Length: 134
Image 1 (cartoon, rainbow, N blue to C red):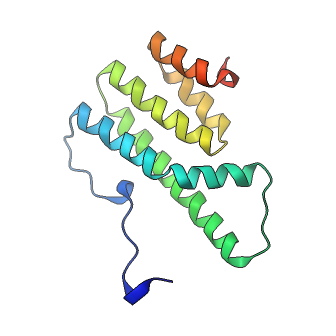
Image 2: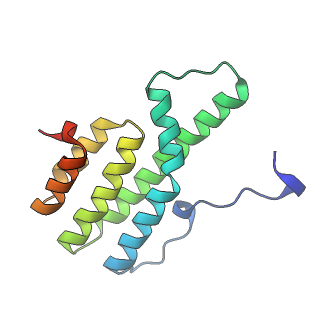
């Protein structure tokens, strides 16, 4: 329930993107999106772990969190595709991989991990998440 009939605030990923966007600005945008969606991703990750609630309000929150995570990941991936600098793109994809792993979406995380080309970034991700090892 919203107080005083205020509309819900817009999410970072729902804001209009003004193209052309520079690589640094795109990387910052991806980082902001991933950090804003982290709470939803963690909720989705708990659901994937088997946490089930019988309350209708919890089911609504879970559905909303899942939709938020999916929208955020999709927009972040679309922005990452347009980054021309290889190292900056790889570090941005790493942010998205972290978001996917919080949501326990290992299939998407593995696909994105394979897209990382820089050896240093790949090594850092593997140190933190050895389960992504091919």
